[in-house]
Image (cartoon, rainbow, N blue to C red; front, side, top):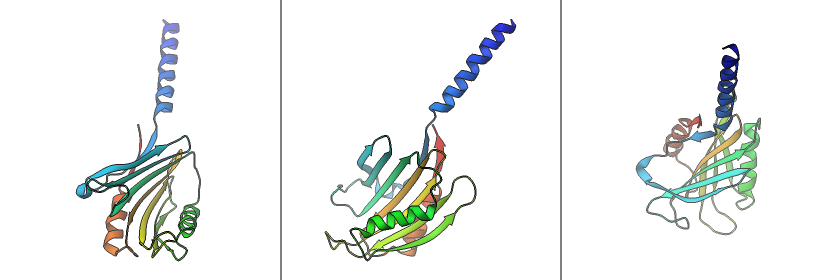
Length: 175
């Protein structure tokens, strides 16, 4: 009987640790229904997953607002301000007069996060302005970046407040 209990306990513990290892961390964001979002682009490899959302009535080439979710697998303990500056430097390659503004930073607790915006009046390859609001959060196993982009020179306070609330309501889940 004692041996049977030990075998059962061993199987139970194996199943529990196996189940815990199978759960995958994800950032769950509820995108507002007002744009009837559809997937415009979805690409994943071992290091990164990029998903772009566009309004249902628009195309990937002709959009008015673009939602992007990026998962960087394995990225851990990256200072939030470093992420902000890396994104800024990347944008500046094609839009050198862009500006970056930190909106909110939280380095307390396990999951650090930052909200910032990058506003670009024009790009080398086109004159259309683009401005982006970013939300970056550190998960246990990955770094998550949500951003929303519009074709404007700057983001209004209303736009920033609306999207900051949406992004900050996102949750790290384990499925």
